[in-house]
Amino acid sequence: MISVASGDRGARAAALAPVRAHMLERAGTEADRIVARARVEAATLVRNARRGADEAVAQAQAQGRADGARVAAAERSRGREQARSIMLGAEREAFEELRRQVLAAVSELRAGPGYRQLLLRLTAMAERAAGPDATVTVQPAGGVVAQSGGVVIDCTLCRLAGLAVDALGDQVRELWTP
Image (cartoon, rainbow, N blue to C red):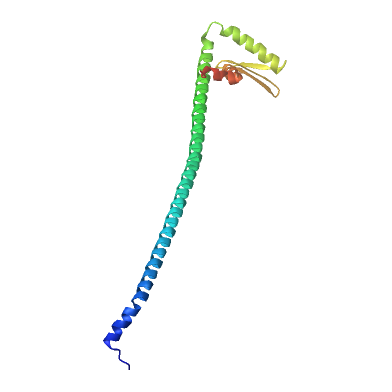
């Protein structure tokens, strides 16, 4: 083994000092360059991540608006259907109430002074419609029924009143349409 005297060691260290300083300087410069590049890359990654996050948020918001619009449209449609159903139910109730009132008013005709004349006219009408061999029967609820062979002519007050109300058709809607 070769032994180096301490004086040689100091001379060598002094001789290598510029090399060491140069190497340390190069290492520091390289480290600064690597750190700077890492900062640029990190900033780019953060910028790209933010852009991606912003795009994802914008897309989610757009999707949420689209979904919300579809849900709102479906709710409006259901609301219109429900309103129409309620309206039709109310119209049906109003129509049935009209029918009840007409039938009640017609049943009161029997007690009126013109009922006998009305009965004669209904009998003549039923006989003409049923034919010459018709049998006409006065009905207890009012009106007449004529029969001839297989033909039955119903001229009862309730039947005629119901036909009259039905004949009003869409005109009856004017009673509850503003």
